[in-house]
Length: 340
Image (tube, rainbow, N blue to C red):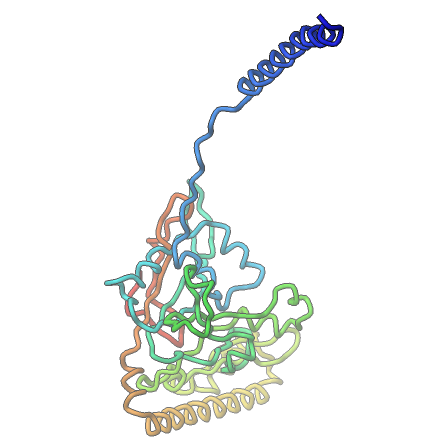
């Protein structure tokens, strides 16, 4: 055998144990990898979001104090009844609807504990046009009621886009659901004056019903806030039922009013009565004028408007509010046609 061939054979003999050793390591490594692999886990399934699931949250709760907003959302409220109303055979199916929210503080029980909770409520107005473009601002502390455009309070009706349509262009959608939205940023509240800030707490969506005499037109009462030291006098005076002289003497007897302020108080009340009578007269004239100028189509729309009031349904994650449901919406809207 040639030397070269012998050397080659020798190298082959040496290579065999090395190859075997490498194969052994490879097999061991594979065995280790197989052994270390984790058992297969069950795939996670996430429940699909309902198409209108966030509808109630998108509706601004008018008249709710800013510092109470977070408390409104502390529970996982369920408004599936509102969602179902838009489905086939539902109360709102195929109709143009305007939604606004509000809150009702009520004493309810939850998990064995009774406490006052801000319950969110959604009011649906079935109408071919916006039911109002104004906001009413009133409270016991305010001398007079204000009716102002919604936009002054950064509120407006905007189309609601269901979840399945949010990738579409808004202008191509023929929305039938409109919600009251407020664009006032909470972060900017600290820069607002107190009076402006308080207005949001006293806001109510104003609804003008031309076929129904307004409550203010019928009222013969005036709110009196007489500015006097050490504290103002708060009272109500009815110009049909109360006699001013007797009314004033009674306040003096009860030591609410000083004797030397009697004449000033009487003049103050007379002025408030004159203002209220003028406001009632102007309201009647405005309603008559609006009716005279209204088209038959608009009259039919006002007559056919319907108001539905939705409360959250009971779930294990939220209090049962079935015992505190009330038909009254607010002093402008009156009672709902139906509570759901």
